[in-house]
Length: 381
Image 1 (cartoon, rainbow, N blue to C red):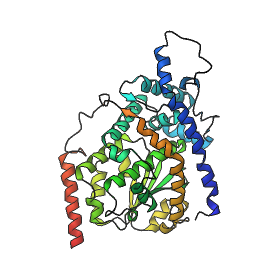
Image 2: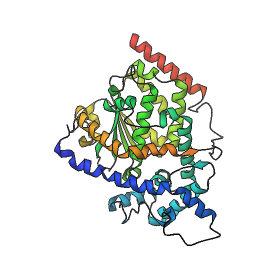
Image 3: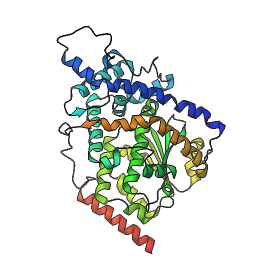
């Protein structure tokens, strides 16, 4: 039962339906844009009955259009991402033209909101944004069982959501960020597979990446690992976990600003320490483990935490609001499955990457297996 205090939140989330309609209009006419580019040397006057193409309209004009950003957000974008109107428009045009002309891409969205995911994640370096887009499509192509068909109404995925394994708090924190709650108790390893778990994460991030405010401010994560057992760890194939871990950090255009963990079992700390050694120093410094909920509450706004974690709103109410948000983005998220990467030849590889440190190499896998064994031993002891 949702209380009256959340009506404003629901009303704000309903704006995404309008945004989706605009996205759909532009996405449907990508092929027309391609034809127009090919006929650039033989221009003609547009037939009035011909649909408006992407070059003739803007889906989102942040400074006075359909979905304007606030002045404070524009300042954050300028300070942290080097974003201003001129940079944004020029970068969007370059990236959009690259997508349209790239023969390895098929049915890839070209609306502002989608392309800005990658530009903002890479602080408007167009070449880096291009690489991230290719890697994003490649991870979806390589792990389709985990990253596609992200329908929150699909029974298995719906149950993971209903149990509250992962959801975004409806309120933003003091930095304007959405707070992603991960509640390990909400995942039953006897009922839910690693695929179910991964799909819940992909769905959450795809939904949140559709919001331009979140693209700018980034995400805060809060993970409660109470109730984690051996089954949670052994649910994953070590090799697949290693690949997902490595590719996920490089491929998803997300700004992970803070990661707060509580109730972490001693054996799981070994895994976390191991993972920290394989991420950037920036990411490593953003991950904090707390000894108690009281310590956590000093760092994360209470309004963004469930009542069960010392916050103000019951977890069940947060979950219901999250389901409404997923419903509003359902068609948009499912539509991403139309995007195809026909070849990965354009992806630049890390030729100097040390195999000993590689998170896909045998050393990584063997250490994951060792951690699983330690977890089992700890439980039996």
